Structures are given as structure tokens and as C-alpha cells.
Image 1 (cartoon, rainbow, N blue to C red):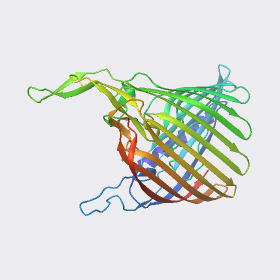
Image 2 (cartoon, rainbow, N blue to C red):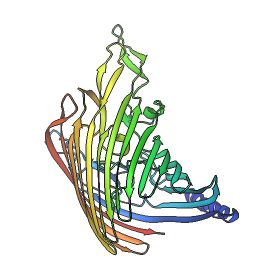
Image 3 (cartoon, rainbow, N blue to C red):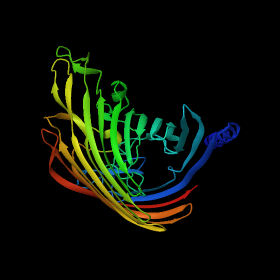
Image 4 (cartoon, rainbow, N blue to C red):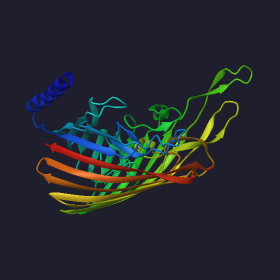
Length: 409
């Protein structure tokens, strides 16, 4: 009841304020969404299976039974959302606008509570624009799959919303973007697991620069992303004399440089899009990867690191209007590190390859969308060699069925 009251008061405050300020307009929007899913086995996932990543490896009990070979399903409404688009008076010759949007996803293992999705302000001079706040990570970018599945193509497609400062320059058919970003809801993986500390202690934000060509039907472009994280501030080493743990201050850093290319064609009925990413330690973007140690100081346990390189690509084709169908194909490959590594940290570091094939059909009328999707995801698990590549693999697959209904306004 308190959450409902909060939403009502927030909406009332926005609408009443909008009516009082000259040249200030607003538009409230949102959707009520219900999803049902069924998975044929246990998976690496978040939010109790809502955000699917990839199937878990076989885990055999003493009798030879695979403990992960058990189906799972759920019905949920957590991605119902509400937002408001605001426009305000000009300042310094720029048009001003803002967006605030939230859903009920929660965070961690807490569901059904309000989560911030987007919250940003814009200054727009026509060809030049500044954005300040939280929105899609630029690696999610101007091209993303059109899917019912809420993972939107992850882990083949980078998926992340992040606080950022973004500058855009758009002369004619070109779009140049440059961003600096931090992490809040989507976090890197390291010695502590998922943690904000790695970028918090780095004092160097993520950086992105990208260039797109855009016209009425085509978008094509590329981008570069750089990250610099601090895995640890101190180590813990057993004292050889008494076995007690001794802590040493260490100076450690792991850098990653990632690149991507993308394209999209769209007319009234047909949409064809694709993206290919060569990533280095992009675990904060809901994908596989990580890094390993390359050297260690035997006295202090201070380490140097090298990232795993991951190639991930996808292709999405959609056709139709009222009845709209399509397919999605994804492929991911662990290319290993450029140096010999040990003590790997990350997500799916023992996965050599990952594939996905999905098909969906939706029925679309004003304000309503109802549809179903089937996807087959296969992971090849194995053993890491001295550069983090995976060999001696075996495959594990998951069949997923999704039925969704949403009312948008």
C-alpha cells in the first residue's frame, strides 16, 4: 500500500508541477506486463529465471543423476513499468528534457520493489547534445534485438544501464557519441564476486566512443570501450611462522579494451539487425568473461592480471505488423587471454562456446501485445588451459518457452 501511495503522490507532484511552470510539458507512459516461462533445466540466471543467461553444467550425484536436469517455471509481473518524459524551457539556447522511469524488478534477491531504470536530463542544441544521468550503456547502443525475452539477447548482446555523462554530435546522417560511465545496478565480477568496489576504487570511469551512420532505413556503426578496475586494495597472506593471516597493501589494476560493430535495416514490415563484439572483461554487461592472474609476488600476494577475450555475435530478423514473427541467432566464443593466466575471476569462464536460436510470434493491436517465444540455448563446458581457453568440452542445452501479454499506454 505504501508503494502504491508513493507512486500516486509522485505522479500527482509531477502533473501539478507541470501545470504551474510555463513552457513545461509532460507525458506519462508505461506498461502492465505479465510473463510466463518454462525452462527444461536449471540455468545461470537472475531474478528467479526472468533474466536467462545460459544452462548450468551437469552436476552428478553419487548415483549418476544430473542434479541440474530439472525443469523450472514461473509467472511474474515484475517488469511492469511507469515513466514520465518531461520537456522544459530553453536554457543557453538548448532545448531541455528529462526522463524518469522505474519498474518493480528490485535488486539482488529482493523482488517486487521499485527499481530505477532511466533517470536523466538532456541539453539539446540541435546537432549537439549532452545527456547526464542513467540510461542504456552505449554498448547496448543504437542497435539491439527486438525480442520478447527480457534478456534482450544477452549474453550475446551487452545489456546494462549505467549512470553516465554522454556527448552526442549529429551532423547530417552521422552520430558521434562519447561517454564516461560508472556502475551501480550492473556490476563487474572479481575476487569479491559482483562488487561496486572495483570501479569505486579505480577512480577511472568506463569510457566509450562510437560513430554511426543513420538514414531513414539504415543504421551502421562501430564503437570502442575501455575499462580500468582495481581488483583488490590489500591481500591476505598466511604468516609462515604462526599461520596467522597477514594483510599487505597492494597496487593492482585490470584494464580491458573492447570493440563492436553493428548494423540495422528497418522498413514498415521488415527489420534485420546484427552486432559483433570482441570484449575484454565486460561482466558488468550481462555477458561471459573475466580475467586471471599472470604473476604474483610471493611475499605480499600482489598480482598482475590479463583479461579473457570473448567474441559474441547475434543476428535478428523480424517481419510483420499486426502479426509479427522473427528469429534470433547468437554465438559466443571464449578466445582466452593473451598471456598465461591462473585463478580466473568472472562469469562462465569454463564455457568454451555458447549458442542460441530463438523464434517468436506476436499479435499486436493498439496498446496490446500478446506473443510466444521458443529458444534453444547450448553451452559447451570444459577445462581451462594455461591461457584460459576451454578444451575437452561437452554440451548442455536448455529449452525455454515464454508467453507474454502487455498493455502499454
